[in-house]
Length: 166
Image 1 (tube, one colour):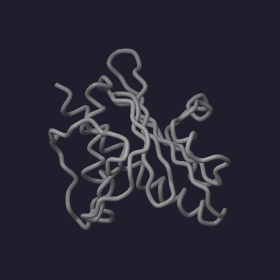
Image 2 (cartoon, rainbow, N blue to C red):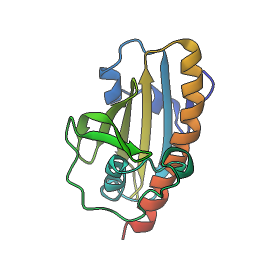
Image 3 (cartoon, rainbow, N blue to C red):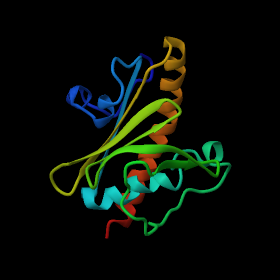
Image 4 (cartoon, rainbow, N blue to C red):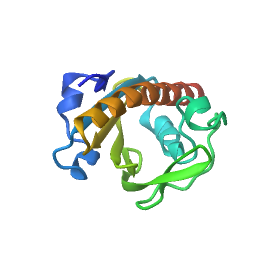
């Protein structure tokens, strides 16, 4: 499908993601990934901050409010906590969490997982997968839209984790 992959290898596509446990036979599967030059302990707090803001194009999905550029002292995410905040509204809920390793939430019928995979030399692969049961045409639109927004989000989280790791 158009827009279903960005920044991921074939081995990262075939691996299992927590979101796979929540949607059987999805019409949409989309994978995104980025290498972060920081250990996973420095990346995880930024991933958990998606509860506060979208970290993508703030002028589109946050009514122009800037996503925080400093870490906020948040408790570890828990199942049933709010998943994200966009346009000043809390959206979705967390359905699975393994602190420091993965955060999975659901929003508007989609289920998405952020997975941290430690690499050599204090590098982390930040992987994202979205799954959804929907029509083929909606899946195409969501895939392309998500490619734009999730790509920006992962690049922002990468930049922030690399900048603040020390």
